[in-house]
Length: 377
Image 1 (cartoon, rainbow, N blue to C red):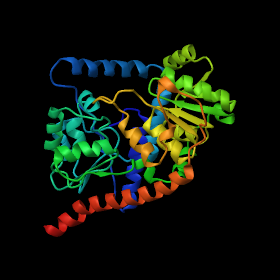
Image 2 (cartoon, one colour):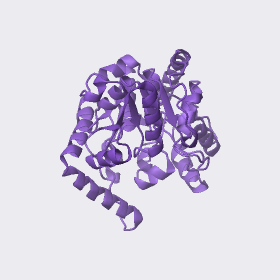
Image 3 (spheres, rainbow, N blue to C red):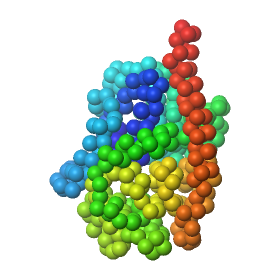
Image 4 (tube, rainbow, N blue to C red):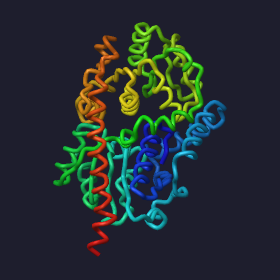
């Protein structure tokens, strides 16, 4: 599945590359979920999304953005043929091992809207062949009905790992078994390996000058304002990714000093972070690549709640792991401060240890399915 999402495609590429390092052929299941069978709210959502997609296809600039994602997928991702029938998954997606991950595939809100939870929990795959690597619940709490749903599906997994501490604690309670915390797949690759991707990006004129890279879902005013204040300190412009010409027009209306970046694919996303003076984001993967490339950065809390719908857990785990909690800011209390105050030398030492630990855990998980199960037959 692909939603034209930077983090989604970059982590898929990273995990596929890591699995190949283990000597495995790794294919992404190209699942295209069908529309809900009956009418109602979710069917209207899918119909609206379909109409929006058709409208986007008529806009040349948006076609170019889609082309950037297709170019990345064609260059870096190996997938199965499209499978759109749930009944066909078990018959056509036949593998020795199934890996669920990464990104927010177990987020209760997202999985319900996309009608993809059964796919993301590998319900179609046989027991004894399933593991997970670094999926995210993306929330701090889940309701009992969703917990029971996860328990039914995940109990047949041979090894389970997630990418945030709170998610691990939730699943340990629900499943009554160990759940590992591992690095996001994107952090299993070195900056040099990511350079090979960034070097394939189509350069932007803004990269010839000093710029603050601004990336947030919907270009939120709080992130834009933080970028503006940092741009003044750095004597730089602000470059913000936009998803369409309409998004760019909105950006210029609320942020006249910003330079909109259109038609950027995953490779451009990495390249823009790599060459930025500073990064301001509310994105998990925007934060990840800032750490990998030692870019001064500030990450905004996406919301100020600590309830079940809060999506701060994964970012907090990431920053706490690397001792970079000071990079997180509340939109109601932002101060430019020393954006370059991150201790990347210490973070690199932690990254090396965590990368080694995560790879060992992944290898053990794969062995449970590919070697240990065969030995017991």
